[in-house]
Image (cartoon, rainbow, N blue to C red; front, side, top):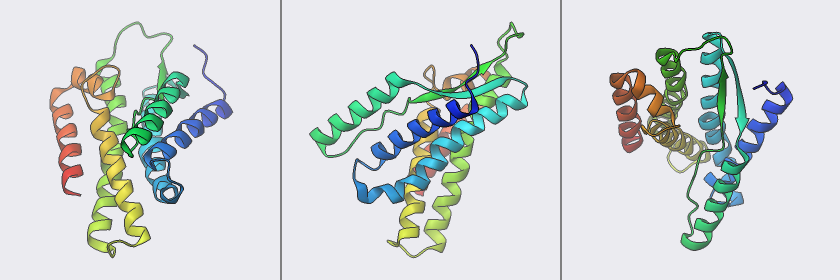
Length: 195
């Protein structure tokens, strides 16, 4: 598997980002300005965290979009918007691929840490955004709404990705360390409930 060019990786991130913005904004133009910062921090920062931690371990790592996942996400989003008025989010638009050509064993700790880095980034961003919105901003203003979306989407994405189902991050984290997995998924769930 050859790594894509830097331009291809940026294009893959951008396409996935735009699709998520449309779905999370419920295909409503008025919500897009509120959702852009939320998806930027929730999706792009999540994927870049995986990539950077993998590179720290010496792996070749890059983001690749999954066109079938993008088509599925758009199809589900549009269909549910038309039938229920609210688009459902199917967030499997791509992934960070890790390539270790000379490693012939499964390094559970490295893969666990790489997998945990994305959701931890979401938990950190979601917590900071939620606390600022709750304690430092006037309710129902534009900055408050942006930070509420940012907190909600980041914490939802952390919880979703920590579900212990392959190929989600939670499966790899649980295989490595069940204690870290339990604390992370519990924190994502609780913080989303209170912030």
